Image (cartoon, rainbow over all chains, first blue to last red):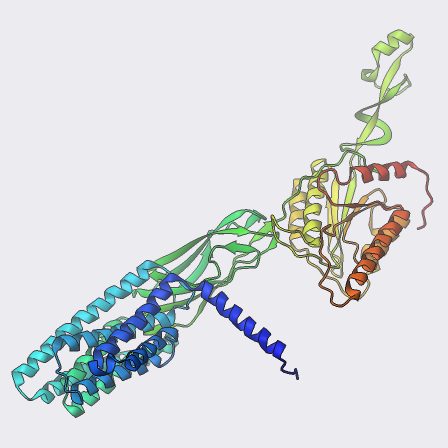
Length: 197
Length: 437
């Protein structure tokens, strides 16, 4: 068993720092862009979701910024799910405890930002930090995401119109639209089930 | 879920999309909040859109466009192709290629992400440089496919490595025609025997059996007696290149960098073999190591190519035992052969082997392949430098002892390295000697 000495600890720390430096030198611009997008979308979603009284305080702003950078640093972990959950909780707090109104524009923007956070984190998770990425990959990924965002916007506008049309019975809209989404997901999962021959 | 039998696996993003959408919808229905359904919508819609068409076959990687036979220092083109046979396009293919140490590619140690449309081949083209002689298999290439907006990822698929041979650079080498003994019937070396040849040996009186076309009319008219021109016969010779592979020393920097012992050994052997084979001599190769590889003597360009191929497999194969005497005995070498031993003379076994060959009457030349500027090993303590000096003195003593045995030892310096020692060996060959067999 080797004894732990101050010299050995210093050498270990030096080697660790050299390792980090070597890893940092290998980072490619494309992966910085993707992970920066993850952090940016996460921060914007949190800022938009939380009440302004909480966001624009030194502690609140710093805390949200720190939280938003975690999925960018560790995209293969559950931290992205945690950030999405924290944003949704902030949205619920803002619209209930802080009595902020639910506007369609804010709702659509938040939904789009959360999806952008999810999909860029998915891309960052499959790209090691030193990957040389073809620009075509990024462009086609963005194009597919745009389609989803457009559908989301249409869905949100339709849901808001449905709420306006039904008066105070927003629970009815929530139930019907939620049922549609659940059916779509259930159909998808059924289609994905392994076929037995 | 995704069909794992196909080789496609769901990612954490897949679980996140389903989980977030499901939880938000349930909470929305329970609380009657439509805004939560809107927040869940992109996750559900995105997942449905992404997974409506999913791939069922894996990408197929392959390395092509490789110039498999080059000379060290040459540039080569490496094309890595990834075929997507599936009718569904992939978001990207992530590929990594395992490059050998002596093949350099800019950013070759990075993974690459390239698009792979349905039924197409994504190609990645590299300019590579082979930095050192030897066999350098390029690959294998490992590929991951990513599909359905990052919700599915394939298991890794490996492509076979491609062989690459980098032949050693033959350093410029020439030697004068001093050969201790010529053996064959034809060749470019002037033998000490009279016969049909181009080198003038003298003019003598005509004797029965002389050819009429050899009559020297000028001398005949002057002396009033018939005289003929006599010439020395031209013969070929056998050269044995004996490579000491017991030890490697120094750090190879590839072409343009520092040369290790094996670098010098292999490049010098290639140059010497090329020189003598070009002159029509027979060249054979022998390894002094535990493997005792041997290449039979032959001549011509075919033998030169065989020598280059043989040199690719040179590697240090030492050990604590004495290499087999049966593999290196003087009885295996032609008595007229010139034996050129390429050795760093780091091991007493190699020096003893050279001395044994010389005592058996073989014409032996030792080429010192130890790099002249070899830095001393990092020795700690006050005794380190002293022990290094003692080792240097001991080695010089071994070289001196070899010279006393009649073995010239010369450092490798390319063209003309061996001229002086070959003349010495040729002169010694003409002197009477006693041989212990």
